[in-house]
Image (cartoon, rainbow, N blue to C red; front, side):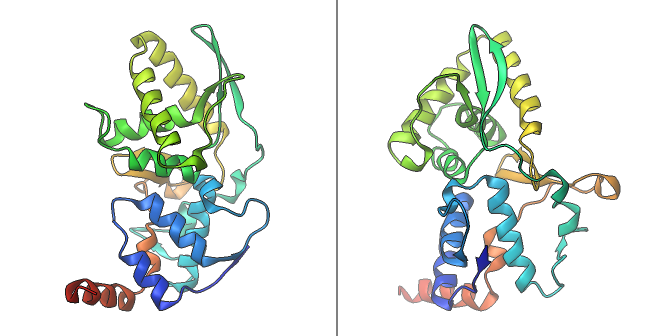
Length: 242
C-alpha cells in the first residue's frame, strides 16, 4: 500500500466534516490518502483494525515526534501488535444458541459507519450500549442467513441494522447473555493489528499488554492527521460563509 500527502483542499474538506462521524471521516480520509492498495480497494470494506493501522501509518509520517508518536502517556508501539496479524478472511462459527447456529464476521468500516449513523434511532439505546448492540447486530449472523451488504450504506443496510438491534434487544435475558458471551469470546479470535474495544464514543484500541498494560484505551482520530493550517483555513472559510 502506498500513501500520499493530502492536498490543502482535501485537508480542509476533511477538517470540516462533522466530528461525531469519525468512521465516515476515516473513509473520506482514506479515499484521498491511499494512492494504491492491493486486494480490497474500497477502505469502507476494510476491517476497522486495518483502517486504524493506515491512519496511524499516515500519522507516523507527519508527526513531529517521529514514527513511534506519542499517544497520551504511551506510544503508538504500545497499541499496534503485529504479532496478531489477520489469518482468516471468513466468519468463524460460534456454535448453537437457542436453536440457531451463529457466525461471527469481522467489523468493517462500512458496518461501523452505519452504527455511527443510526445513533439516536433506537429509544433507550445510546453510548457504549449502542455500539455494543450495533457491533453484535452487524457481526453476528445466523448460518445460511442472507443479509444486506454493509456497503449498501444509508437506507437498506441502516434499516436492517436498526431492526436487527431491536430484535437482539428483545431476546430473553438468558439468550442474550449466552449470545453476548459467545460474541465477546469469538471477537478475540478475530483480533489483528489492534485489540479493539468499545466506548461511548465508538471504537478504541487497547494497549497490547506487558509494560503497556496500565495504559488507557486510545483513539486515533483522523483530524490528528490534518495540519493546524488546514484547520485554521477551514475555520476562516466557515466564518466568512465560504
